[in-house]
Length: 234
Image (cartoon, rainbow, N blue to C red; front, top):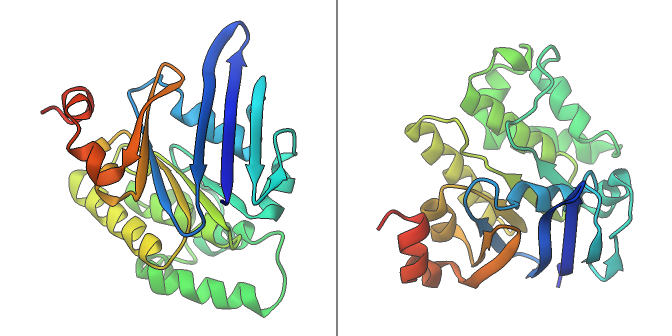
């Protein structure tokens, strides 16, 4: 088991955002977390990456307790997050954004991974010398994913990768996610597009007001009447 979350709680002041969440992610697995706005999805990812305080419960990564670990320690262990809203460094070039993703690494493997990112996202190679802020929304999302992959993560946290994108670009981004899954990248996907997320995921959890209310195989949840009614508009 790569990631184990047990009874996790988190607060914003007196407001409880997460209430006793327990879930797991196995190595090589893609797990989706779906739910409405305000359910606590992004808060959970922020707890995993270490930028949101945990008020209860435990997080273990590959058997190591990281509940109180600093964010940079989590990156060194192999956790990388693609944040909601992309958050690329706009004035910097595309290539410099990618190099920042590998800031903890050295040697020839970085150059090899840079070439791999350009193979995965050819448009980034074409625009590698341009400021990242000049890219389209879909291209910035590709850059944010590639930047995270440059850290050579063991676990990739994806926060709403389809947010704000046109339908055609959403499909393109999910093709990239599918490709990464097929390559064996371990992915924890937070996504409001429940249908697309569940169709890709090995397993999935449904979050409501800070608690897990449904869990199961991705395809099984696609057929679940409660999920259909609440999240799929069926």
